[in-house]
Amino acid sequence: MAREILASTEAGHPRGSWPAEEQAQQFRDQGIPVTVVMDQPTDRFLVIAGEEVTS
View (tube, one colour):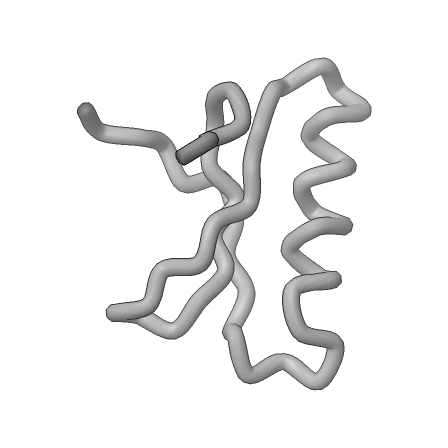
């Protein structure tokens, strides 16, 4: 199942995942359910549309 990537941030950012979490909160404030995941092949934090992913 394809998931829509709404935003991404480099994993090497000095603030770590915080910028992605801040972007995610902006989407949540608009009523859009999103989650932040780490994409290891691209070394980026991705803001993904949809409910939170659990393992």
